[in-house]
Amino acid sequence: MEKPDISKSLAPVFEKLEKLSKIKRFLLFGGIIVVIVAACVYFVFLPKIQQYQKLSSEYSDLDKKLAAAKKTAKELPKLKEEFDKAEIQLKIVMKALPESKEIPSLLESISLSGQEAGLEFVLFQPGSERNKSFYAEIPVSMQISGKYHNVAVFFDKVARLPRIVNIQDIVMRVDKSKKDNDLITTCTAVTYKFLDTKDAEISEKKGAPPKKKTVTKPGKHA
Image (tube, rainbow, N blue to C red; front, side):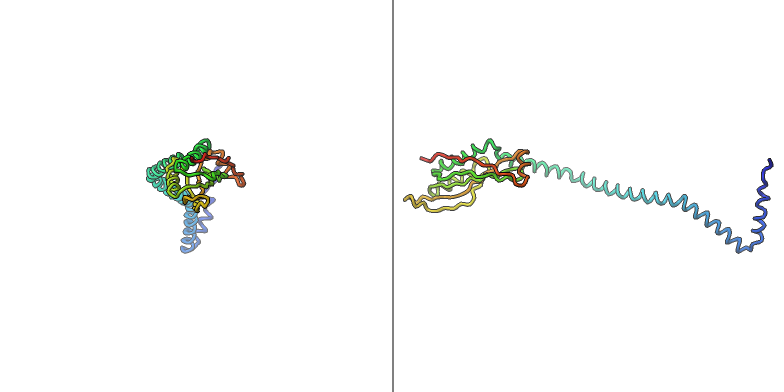
């Protein structure tokens, strides 16, 4: 089988090209070059440009993340110091919040402080607990009879207790049943207790029933 003669096949094409004017031949070759260049741009350079743009965007994102990581690493010692301080403060607060088993002894300490100050308790009524986030407030309604100086000594003793006790809603009036200018002082002592994890979860639920405390009857001062 004879191979086809390519030169003979292309001869008519070259003859037609020779018949064209120089301007038409120039335009034809220019068009061919434009098509070749456009094909190279579309199939070769355009994917490279798109890949470059993608890599450039990824590099910009990584550079921002690296800058943020460097900033965080730079602030890490400061954040650790703040965390350590907060942890120390939390431990101090936790020591000032008694657990449930310590509440009776704390109430007894309040009562004993009043007796040592020379006061007579007319009322000593623990109220319902008011649960907060990780602690509960325990209000104690009190009415005490005694002189103003004795009441001041009592408040000072309560303030010096190792646990937190706040005296609120203080109202004083003259005790007309006595002739030695004694006062009837009505107030509320609010103490606090630490809630464990289970109790804290219950306190977060709406409508959680308050816990009742039993009435403590302190002895009267002789």
